[in-house]
Image (cartoon, rainbow, N blue to C red; front, side, top):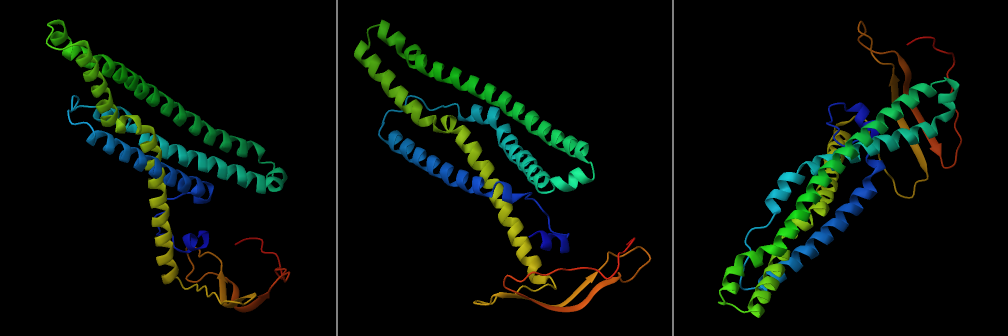
Length: 275
């Protein structure tokens, strides 16, 4: 993938470091889809079982207005965490080089900056969740007393009995739970949408790379039951300078076969002081 991106810079790379989170995105997508489908099915069956609808308005609209920013915050959080994990892995793999060039301070500055992005965005998520949970708690408490406020005049005027009042309250509570499915499942919806967006972008990049691979002059041919790798007509050039038409050729029309478990050493005839 990295080779094709390098040779095809026109590809819009929307998916950064997918190897750091692809398994988590797929797992989150499957689990959240299952949870949402089961919850939606239960809500639909429960709603049909009640004939008298006492509560036609739920907090779904207000919940969405308050929590819609969570979609972007969750998406950005995945991006920041993937970048941080990638840099940690890169630092671990190149620890000797970092120590040799004494660039510990630069690496520490980079990791500190990436970690600060994670902390800042996570605080934004906490603030938004606090507002959302506060509204949800208020909405739940209001739903408990709302049916009594509506029918209390009929009860005190003795138009309905205490049993009727209790029956209305229970019916209202069940219908309210059904209609509040979106509000109660909003956190799951946020996680599902974030994972879905990343998977769609990853699929987009794979399709773009597949198209670029077909247009590229580099051909990968996979032969079954062949335990070797063969290179044909390989040409390697240095990057072009401003006043050059063709870059300096390092390798010209190389044909090479690598056998299975073969050790190969590539060395230059002389050191190049500059490019």
